[in-house]
Amino acid sequence: MRILNETSPVNIIDPSELLRPEPEFAKKNLNAFRDYTIIEDDPIQERVRKTYLEMHTNQTVDFVKGKIAKWCNFDTFQSTMKEALIKLNDLVDESDPDVDMPNIVHAFQTAERIRQDFPNDDWFHLTGLIHDVGKVMAFFDEPQWCVVGDTFVVGADWGKSIVYRDSSFHNNPDGQNPKYNTKYGIYEPNCGLDNVLISWGHDEYLYRMLKHNKTTLPDVALKMIRFHSFYPWHTGGDYEHLTTEKDQTEIKKWVLTFNRYDLYTKSTEVPDIEALWPYYESLINKYIPGVLSW
Image 1 (cartoon, one colour):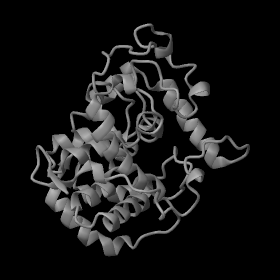
Image 2 (image 1 turned 45 degrees about the vertical axis):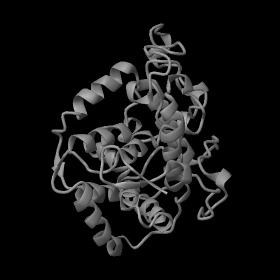
Image 3 (image 1 turned 60 degrees about the vertical axis):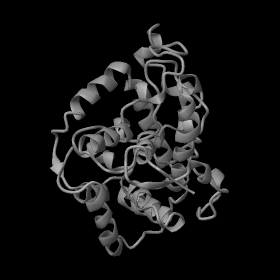
């Protein structure tokens, strides 16, 4: 069954058909992904822990508003989507305990597996390819703790499932502010995820950047991009008191479907990126062509 996206001529999958059995394509036991156990003298685990400590110390309401003001003028640089993606050759995500490879490899791993499972949905393939390209902020003097990693709501009590929650927020000033440290904080019950402030990172930046550049990707693709790192909500079960029914049903199903490909395709196997570029360039030209404002 197919349904028509409300604001785009793209035919998309009925969300009721999305969720499937656990992926057989994962290259290791599923329980081995996203392992944040602190292991003494493990440099990757220490790198990850330090990234989250900085994030949870510094990501406040005022900080997020400042980054929106800085980055959402879209006057930092101009480039095509392909040129921005190529920059990810030089970026290793400091928050990721599963891989220690350039982010461009992960982009193609995600996109190609989506393409294999959803061959007729080219917008979904492109979404898989570009979902992390907002990490280009790291090349413009942004520390990785405000570029990568799981996101969370600011302006209300921190979700219980946030990575390292009990050991990393103690110096965040919002925790001492009665405006921000209650269940609802500055929000109304069930106000909807579109109306909450989420910690600043590549998800929110790319979502806003694509809207600004008038992409023709469907709305569901933009939701996947905006919320794919929002693990405390889509996987941890937090913040349901701030969501709408649509957030909890249709949107979450899309995001969880995307998450399977984002997370479980991570491995040391490198796709033939040069051979794949012509196909993905055709999708870039279809959905977000030309020189873009970043």
